[in-house]
Image (tube, rainbow, N blue to C red; front, side, top):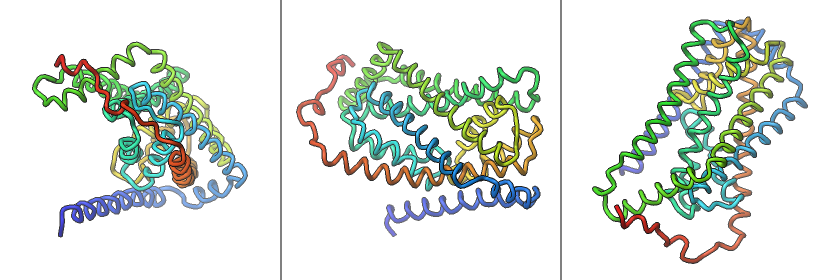
Length: 336
């Protein structure tokens, strides 16, 4: 059997295993918690409200797409709106089939590398955008923590501290590795790419307001998802202080980053239930809200696949700009 076939086989087996892990976690939750209460809460969500939540979910991701385009273009990707939509919504669709909620980044990068004017800048912009998303989750959780003085258990404090430390360490490590790269030891072609990366880094330093706007957009997107979840929770009979949702929801999403299940299935629900117990939330109702939110995510992922195809069609009908732009390389490469 050829290596590509073996690779596909391993990926398929990994997908099946992750799906099995997610379903096993859900099955365990259904065994430990009163099933009837979970189903009653899920059935209490009116279809009209569910559709409105999906509209809000897609609107939030539309803002996320604009934030994504702003960041990668700051680094020199040169993506049009249809091209950025093709990358972003294609990545959301890919999240349904790849590990954890960051699995779609593989699809997003794969599409973007074919469309970007400068690949190195696009990769840097994509990395920064993802780090901004993680930082936005931490900031959103911090807002919830600030609004809940004296109400957090030591366990919640530890979880929040670990999440904050991990996000900060990721940013510092990425910056340190990038700054310490021994460029002179690389080939000339590699030095040209490093020069492009450093040029993109200088572009971000010259325009910090764009970076801050991207971060603010990320916080707005995550906050809108928290509000939508709180609305669903109220209909399901789970009435909590909104501050508790601002703390627990981002931390549960951070937990879903761990690539042990398909699109975070099961992991998010278990983490959310554990985080909201200190605030008096019955775990059965919390799991019910998490499952309803999962239906929103899956439906949004399927709609994103359609939007990605539409964006691809629109992008293919537009004339491709040609010229020496793609062939340009920063002159600073010669100095390495």
